[in-house]
Image 1 (cartoon, rainbow, N blue to C red):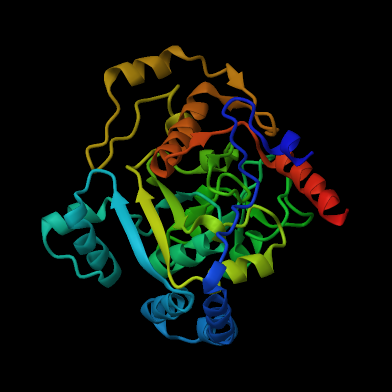
Image 2 (image 1 turned 135 degrees about the vertical axis):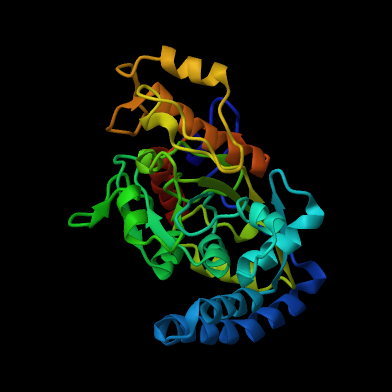
Length: 358
């Protein structure tokens, strides 16, 4: 019965089913040893950070080092990073420059524009709690929660972002939640990047869900970086809510894990200004051509396209912005976009729970 709710009719992709774990076979005793050896270390370093270290004045570098210790405990050592428009040989120097903030040459400053900086937005895929942990260890951003029924977001902590990867999806924000738009959040935290998970819920990494309209509240000149995170082995994804034990076993029983990180070129929210003026020019030279501008001018601002779960009307120019980001995430992750959203996942979770109780 779960397949009726989780199988996309157009592509045949099931983005909510958990990825099966490869049988341990003869290596089962070794995997049990790794799990039992690592779990007290992971619990110690994790609790130490969230209870003590994050409140101490250890600076951004100290917090990042603590988060990398958490990532390193289960063997997440290998990071396959690729940035659109940058040669593979240049990626390491760009990351070093970004982390150390010691750029001096014009080339280094140009390459820095390929990475999220303070005052920019990260539109990230969402498949695992490791997503938020990795982004925090690299960019030290502000995290937000998005909902398919509103353009506003809810600012959350890193710990809340980790827990949301195990939680049931929500169509609407909880009552009395303090919501704001992205423009207000960027103005409030000008020295931090802002992370948005536009799919609103986790998947198994095999498809891109329809987006929340929250990205449409970003300022027109603010850079939006689509970032895709994929894992090998892929069984540390958490598409099913409450899968704490399975996640910990898959994470801690394997010798190593690899994160495949892909960062796309900058996207701008031109939907707000398409009918009233030209698109903002990018400092990177990322400009729209005449045909794109002409096409936006032809589109009437009163013509709207309503999503299946969205209460707000979305204009065609705004739809193009969301489509561009979604296509970038699909291309980076080498997957397809699907028509299943938060509502379909809620139906899947109910069917999955009934099936497991039998």
